[in-house]
Length: 144
Image 1 (cartoon, helix red, strand yellow):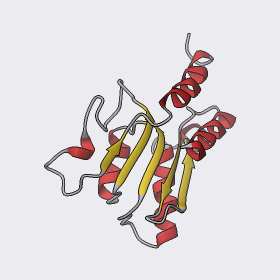
Image 2: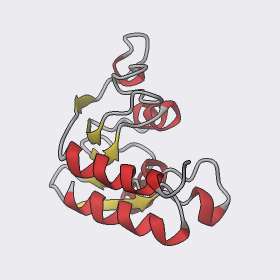
Image 3: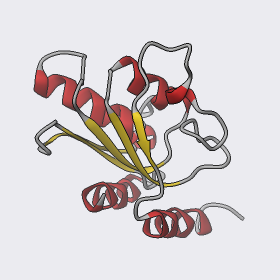
Image 4: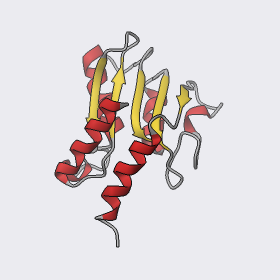
């Protein structure tokens, strides 16, 4: 989670919401990492999780990320939660809960929907205070 927090801080360089993510292999090696790049790249899919998942898929040479863990500073949204299911990620670890858009238990629970063919394990609240502080600091300067 510390690596994800470092990546989250990097997103502020291009004035994006500070969210960072890493994908770990079954051996615990970082095989993908990302920060939010929506503002920098003008890409609505430029969420930290999506960037990290794409990089991990490139590293392993296929779209299936079985055995992998995604670690992210904020609870994933519906798009990212869906991508985690489709990529067959085994575990999702996140920091801060997102009561407004969280899709891993807060507002929705996409990853544990029994109608889907894959349901990753979820561990929430890891270093949540640090993740929340980073987000609160960013939004204090961006919202009236």
